[in-house]
Length: 198
Image (cartoon, rainbow, N blue to C red; front, side, top):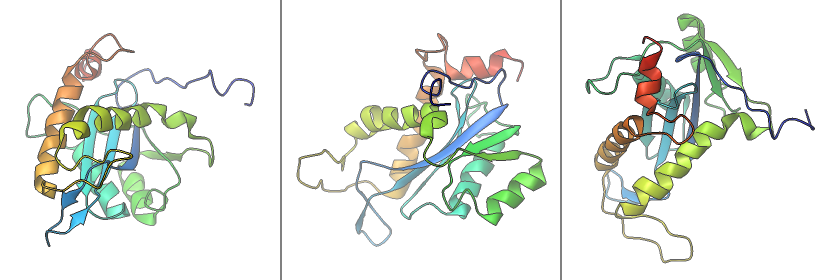
């Protein structure tokens, strides 16, 4: 493991073979329902094979099993946008050891749907590189252009967006991301997901 871990990356062979799910605290300030400034969280479900985003959820509170279940539900379901085709059930749901991912709620959801729930090893984040890369893309390409963007070394920004407005911005970004060419794939995530017959 010590010799090969940095160069070995597990690859999947088909869409919906494995989905990754994780959260990140976004570098943007928004206004909550009481018009108070808050820093929101983003939960993402990513298809490992195609890098397509299958589902997401934004929240003003720290991640919970409920937020994870909502993002997973959106990932499974057919979307209202006919271009957002990623749906179905994965064989494996891969996540870290966050308390929401190790909760009985997520465990029961996966058991009911016959999805294997696998957690990365504690202190070994390499298997989550694809989803971490997407979070970096969100921060540099989406959030940098939004009002309330947090920039290190600068004063705290004035929040202007509501949670609903941020949600709309994330949905638009996901649609763009899924349809543009991915540098490692040589095709868009949407094309890579559809190409295998889904």
